[in-house]
Image (cartoon, rainbow, N blue to C red; front, side, top):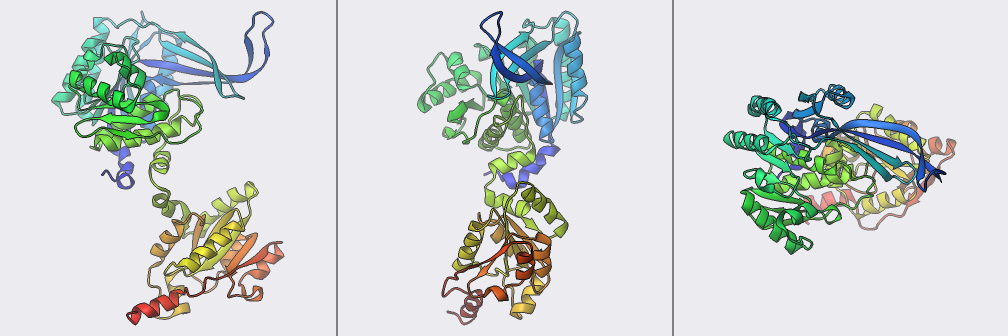
Length: 488
């Protein structure tokens, strides 16, 4: 299985060629508080307007947001929208763009009016000319494609049926990519998918699949049957069907694979398909298998539909969605440099959260530790765990301790849900660290008295409290080590 934790950083080393229909997306946000006296329609009081690169250009934006280089080839008209797109593309250093200017065309522009309060689309207005480009512009597009093909690891055909991807352009792109063994990912449009014959992966949504195969394609079995039929007809290696809240289905050489959608609050689905093809292409460029590419795309889609507008995501957001929390915990929760501690504390204080603190060596984690940490977290909103460094443990516990180095002990603690931050200290007591954290709650085991708890005076002077948690009898790291040494 593809090692996401190891390889996602390699997205920044990939280059993807994207060819398709470019458009200008505008979002007009405002509040609706009344109905027009002129007609029974809502009146939107405009608060702000956002303009962004849309259509196939959104694939390029998504690639750039992941740190992947993109060579983009498309067509615009000689108009204000076309010039706005060119200017917008120049702000993305990872996008190398080649725009063919057709004075006879109108640049596609879509304006969406959105109720800010309800996050709902009220109306969309389109300006477009959906006719195929002429032979001269086909030649110009093909020239840019042929020049770029040797420099890329994968190709995307982003078809919005606006005229840039003519059958001839599509054929040349697929044949050139196949000759150089570059994977081709197609985001299709229309009913005649025969023009995409020979592509590596095609990514219809469920309705597009149903229309292309003249089938129902509603149940899992129906979707698989339709995808198999489509794959055979086109000679593709895989068909990836996006199914909104039902997740995704992959049909390729092996058994069909269904992955469920992530449970998220959907704010806006605009451009989610662009995110899917961008991630699939970037993953295939680094030679990931189809299933891994699908799982990464599924995670990416879950991130962008939770945002407003035509959104993108970063590698960090993708990692946070696709990797289990325990995998991410070390980099998110462990602090060796106390200067980094302040960022976490400042944000928690800004939110008015109660910060708790406990500490220990936590050499061999046992049920007593788990109960202590769970109880400590229950007494606060965020729990900081002070962890003795290796030299400190040796001074306190003697030679042969710690059994585990500080990095291992910190990672085990960070994997626990109860722990929000692990901070390593090298002194014999956590007094300096407590003075730095200034916790509202200071927690220790019930084998201490309040008067024995280090840092009690600091916390109480700040208006905080000391909480003692009952210990679990029969559990001690020292006794565990002794039993191990004695072979018991």
